[in-house]
Amino acid sequence: MVLDLFKLDGRVAVVTGGGRGLGQAMAGALAQAGADVVSVTRTAKSDETRLLVERCGRRFLDVRCDVGRPDERADLIDKITSQMGRVDILINNAGIFQRHPPEEYPLNEFDSLLQVHLHAAFDLSQQVAPQMLERGRGKIINIGSVLSFEGGLNIPAYAAAKHALAGLTKSLANSWSHRGINVNCIAPGYFDTKVVNSLKDDPVRGPQILDRIPAGRWGDPDELGGLAVFLASDASNYVHGSVIAIDGGWLAR
Image (cartoon, rainbow, N blue to C red; front, side, top):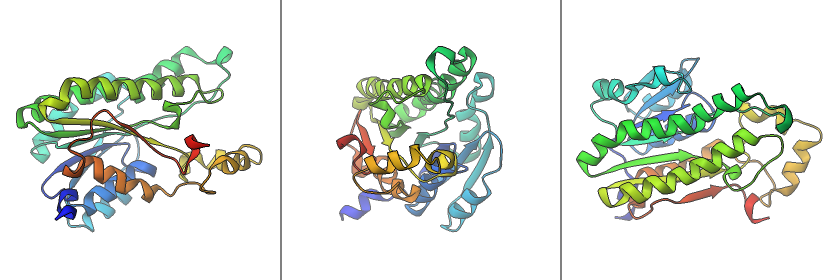
């Protein structure tokens, strides 16, 4: 049955930034498909995510780590594996956002954003690869953005990181696809999360953004779940190095 290809029973998924927003929505969807979930967060506990996962009868582990700090993310996958037994799915979702005119952009903020979005994604992919390669299977999903294709305005670090993440996805896929690891990238558009409330509520930018979205609305975080499950499951076994937009038609405009 084709629906059986989407089942994640017995698999362990790690979601960075899984305590809120898109990460939380993807974690909940993976649990509904049968996966046990590890949420890696920098500050608050993932209590709401835990509830979503445990309601599905799946195991949940909350790990505190600032993935933007190399010392904190060192051996992170080994620590998770020691408690969960294995890692089958890695979703590099953690992110931060800063907006400055490029002539005023602080270099320390530029560097910190790249650490979270890009360096951590490569580091954790490198950490998880040995066990996936040994098993001959694994799923790595990087969370890019429509800014993986566009330059945006006053967000040079974010645009640079998301473009680089798309390139990293393709490069890792070229190296690992024939060895059983699927590496793909989801590129979300504008979703209704607490992180972007200030942008959505902005009296100028909010209407401008909405007017450009062909679907006529911002996305609901739960609408990301189906794509995440697809890329994490056997249904996507021949999908490698893809950067898949889910944006209400934003890039088609």
